[in-house]
Length: 138
Image (cartoon, rainbow, N blue to C red; front, side, top):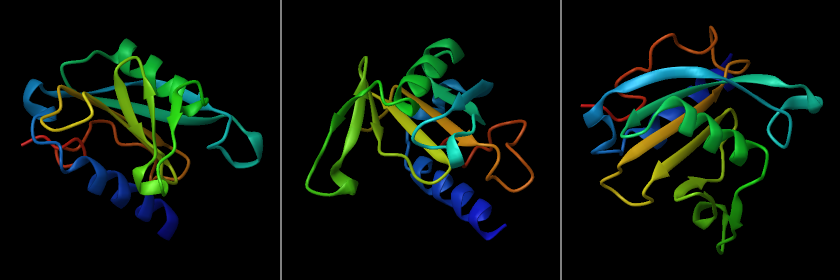
């Protein structure tokens, strides 16, 4: 339970600093299934996708799926905080336990933002609607 709350809190903290991402609204999209490196014991756990800004579910799902399966290009900085993946114009910081975030473009104000949450570690499962604070909407 503590781990699930920590994962959700980390996702909220990561997304709360998106000044422009919520301007075009936010939505809940479909599920992805991550097998490596994010899931426990190689299981294909469900990850819910949420979007904000100028993107659609198909693009966000394709981007997050690629990053969750290590298909993005890794940019290794001096430490984890300065390391990220890039994929077709999106920048995705290395994921936290149970979350993966991607931004387009990389710097604020963001044009679009996409988030995947591991529904198995979020208390009560993934939310039906993206909370405004989660995606940085005002």
